[in-house]
Image (spheres, one colour):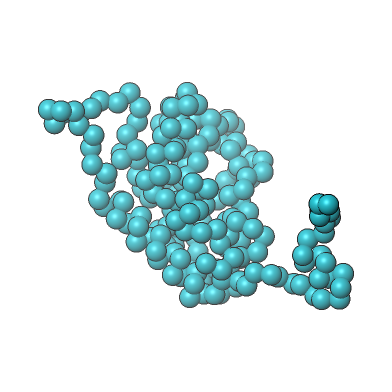
Length: 198
């Protein structure tokens, strides 16, 4: 005989039995938040000032590539735009681009993305918007400064696969914490509706 699956979560069962469950996961303390940021900033500063070695052939010559070199893209030097730029009407849809979500107060690269229409990208649902809201709320609760913005690199390949390969290389290079590929490095403190402790 097999066990019957429950339609209710553990929290719902506890509530039904008279227990009150406000939040099963404690919020991140100010100390934990600052420590989390410092670990990532330390890594990203090393990346910024110590670029990856250039790939060479057997004779020491640089191997030419048809695609843009991720080492030449400087996210912190791009024009800073308001994180809610998409709410401002725009005459055109924009261009194929890579974009970088940054906390400019800490100089912390939070997310790397790609788009075929830079002025349209964030108009719809985007998981990163939720992570940013949780990140901002955590800073607000601890009275810590944050200045979120976004920078676009408008020279991305128009061809989707090439653009995605470049995005993937940059996600790997910078280990931006809001990209899923890097959750094993930094944890997921801002992914859910509640802030998780790391």
